[in-house]
Image (tube, rainbow, N blue to C red):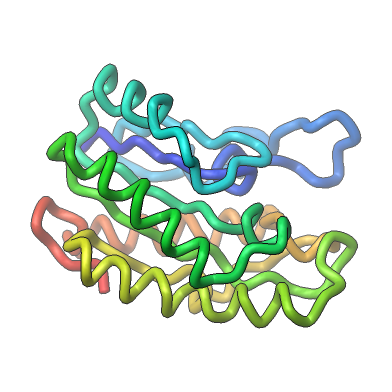
Length: 190
């Protein structure tokens, strides 16, 4: 199966220990550890739920994936948006990319934790609500869904980025999803 992953720095594999925006090695990054699949990692540091969908549409059209995995919302949260507002934007984004006829797996990002980048109770509370908002959205839009906020993903000192162990846990969960075939076209990842 060809999988196109659209996400932020946690999909890209950003290593927060670096000073110049380096990535974890391929053998650490979750998107590069999905076994038995061709993965196109379109993670981008700082990415929010896009208002302009042209880039994503172009990536999907040019790569013709069997599945599009979308995990966004963390940067929107740290930018001060509510979970409800992020889900509204995500709804527009899903409408745009779903029109291309490719199944979409929407993943709610892990819940943020206190750290160097997260010092506000409100951001953490909104982060906790994002999974429920995305679940309702996925049901309305008819796309696949899973909530990484329930996966126990280890984050680094900044409260946002996956640790190497977090990438391992994320990759294991994704591989289990694919092995269970709950992400086949028309399947259910709930």
